[in-house]
Length: 364
Ligand SMILES: *Cc1c(COP(=O)(O)O)cnc(C)c1O
Image (cartoon, rainbow, N blue to C red; front, side, top):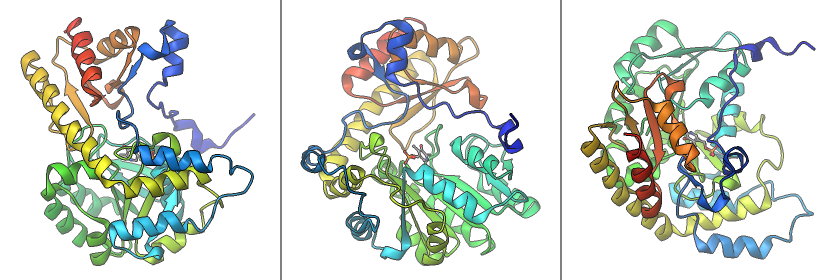
């Protein structure tokens, strides 16, 4: 059977290996497996979320509230924006998909960082658009600007902090960059880890409010999958000028978020204290990774997220290390597919991190 030609060049996205797969492949007891591969919150979500979702769990027969008013109201007060500035997606992934279809076509160019979130390229290829990448591993906004001028992309993706490297763009530099971009080019600011950045360094953080107040060609993306501990619920959002949101809405399938997910995200937003505690623990534990890297003479990229990227030296091999850990029941991310001899590790609980150091030291 012949399929859409556009799919030929797409490499299927490999999500962090699920625990179930390691159980099957290596016969390890699920309770002995530690997953530090997808940047989920190791402390889970707020207990208030579990309580309130349990209460409505029997409501499965009816479709969810497609106006999503409760969650939108929560986002409105959190971010001080209007309801018509918000779209909710099944993960921010789905919002990226809407953006691609709304703004680009097969003649479009999409500009992004050399190393960045893999889904930008996959969605670009769905519509047959051409992907343009910088050469610099860090977001170099001068290089972005040069490529913008010569390539005239329809969409520019800035992932800050960036996945899988954890570094973040300076806010003032980013604002100055957006200022120079033509109003018909859409700039996407993917802030999947922004809650961590706000905690660590305000100068590297940006709010959707300040972005959309100044620019009507920018969309900010956020998610409940990382700091809020709701990866299994699939809720993300986009915040932009109402004219952009109106177009994205044309692509949204009805009921794209489940009843339980809507409730979980709404309640999670209310428990700011829980999230802040998790973030504080995250940076305490991250110090241990920095010390470990120093001791082992491995480069660690300064991270504004809940993961660390360890760049190995020439005598070490990231794939070997990842496989070694996998056989011992620990899932992390090998970045060799990104052209880096590096691994990405989600900062886990104190016990999980101790186990990482122990297992890694067997090899390094
Ligand atoms: C995790 C992640 C997302 C998407 O998360 P969803 O679970 O789809 O909301 C988007 N961008 C980056 C950079 C991420 O790391």
